[in-house]
Image (cartoon, rainbow, N blue to C red; front, top):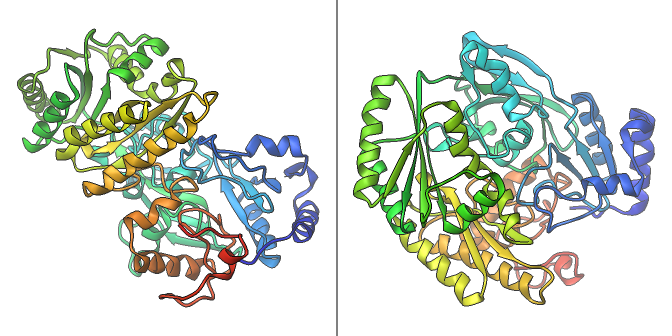
Length: 491
């Protein structure tokens, strides 16, 4: 990536103020600090300048200005990401998309909606549910996260076991390329011809451009929903129940698991009244046609009891269902009640490896003197261990980070992934070579460079080291000039 300088940033700021007006270009340092991190607060960078975009033309104008002067830019939505994907650049432009909040079209007949990137996830469901539809992907932060961010990170959620991730619900986007051009990719049609550029864009974490609108699928509300909470003495038993349910051919909308430490935190925070003495609980939700749900529900209860569940609670109404989910959805924030600091990890393993990996995580934490609370999407093996520590204690941060990295190593050893839904961002870029070969990474870089030859779109994210797009892929000898000068680090 061509290095930006304070001088070039000053020129960009002046041009942006001239084009957009001073009220939409934030240069005051204290105001810029508002945007210094996303949901992963361990990484903080004060952006060089902040632009409050009001429409796609603002975004395009900003990116064109950045491209002219080789100044990096980063897009930011609600800032709820957990991988540092929206971490600003200190000599770059942060393009804030949160004011673009219009649902442009709710095409119920074709089961599609066209939305601005700043539309809140749950806002779309609220707008379409009176017509009998909703937006199926539901991250735990759905009441505050924006759909543009969901598209960037390919966000998941509790119900993605049955309904899939964001990529399964996006059929088109409007994109501002890193050159500042506005293009349309895909649309309302289910499978447009040509290269699957949309597949490359969803989950690209802002490294291929900025999405200024998304066309998404609307899903019909199910005829019936039944939710149960099953309590187990051990995590092994809960893991065995999860595997048994899937093996029986039952695909619930969600199977969520929490261990004793996560339950303790949730009780302290929201008083969810989960069964006393539980070493683990499963939240299982079934939805669909009433006859199907009734049969599957009986199977799930039987399989949980056979696996050792000592108590099964069934939500009798929407209020009880909400209370069951309240404990699970509050778990991340709730650990603040039992620990001053924590790291939210995100990895994936095969479902069948759940009992073994959970034991290995416990041993890893014990050997380091670090507590680990587990709360995760058990149905698809997407783990979210919460590594607890006190940053005021010397060495505690290093121990916690060592455990967090060790958890990812365990995921890879068992054939899994370093991320399920939080993305790579700045946090996990250094782990990419553990999962992919050098040739794999070169191929990915070639795709990135095809979209962004100057390397100005969200630089420093996803890949472990910056690479100039003018370089040819392949093996190289000797130190890279950027590494030699100390700008880049080789992992």
